[in-house]
Image (cartoon, one colour):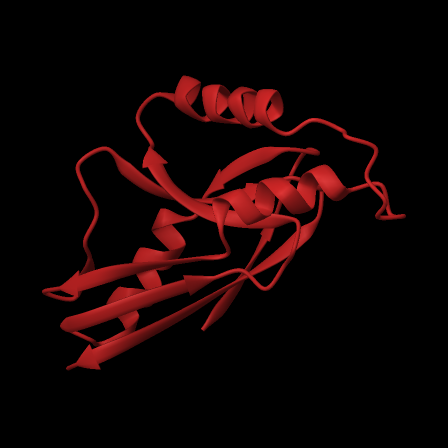
Length: 130
């Protein structure tokens, strides 16, 4: 399964937990694994707190402090986005129990955009027993 996410700014986190959860529930898999993947080189996926929006702001600010322009050679001008994407990673795997994705109380699944705004694809594969 796949769904599209339209990001709204150069850098942002878009919570995709509900979309992923819906795909897991519709899959019919009761026990197994859920793989979430983004086929892009300037965005990623992460799991983090979804209760306080300041957490996302803090992560974006921290990444901005860590990744600086060092005179990159890549001609498109988006090397910072490539580095941040590599730090986040392009996939996450979750257990599926009783037909639902397993997340902690405060956890959400986020697409992390570093070269937007863009239309992104998120691929979800659910495997296990029905």
